[in-house]
Structure formats: structure tokens, C-alpha cells
Length: 71
Image 1 (tube, rainbow, N blue to C red):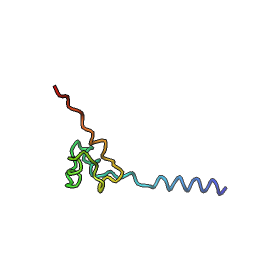
Image 2: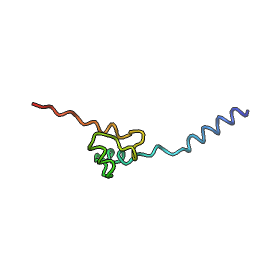
Image 3: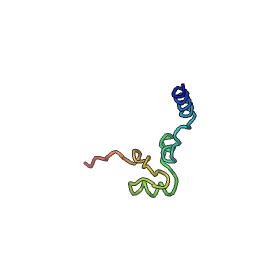
Image 4: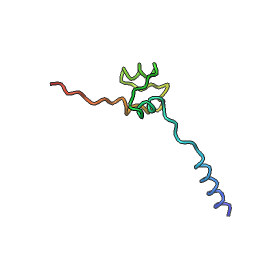
């Protein structure tokens, strides 16, 4: 009985957790824009991820620009 009670309790607690919060860069990307934070703009200009706003490099996907072909 206690095992079933523990399972139900853990399921309820897991459902109450908030969804993952998006970083400033992810929010801007959803809107089809670039992030305007000074720290992010400087990092993106160098092709890097802003470690302050994106500690897990969540914005790395948006940094990959399509290669331009040179003719």
C-alpha cells in the first residue's frame, strides 16, 4: 500500500513542476528576431554563446548561420 501511495504522490509532484523557462535568446528566436541584450549581441558577433544568459549554450542552434556560397 505504501508503495502505491508513494508512486501517486511522486506523480502528482512531477505534474506540478513549471515548464522550462526560455532564455532571452530563445524567446527572441521564437519571435523570429535576434536577442538585443548587449552581452548576447557581443557574444553572437564573435560566433559564441553568451555564458551569462545561456549557461548551457541554449542559443547555439541560432548561431549557426547558413553558409553563403562564394561564386
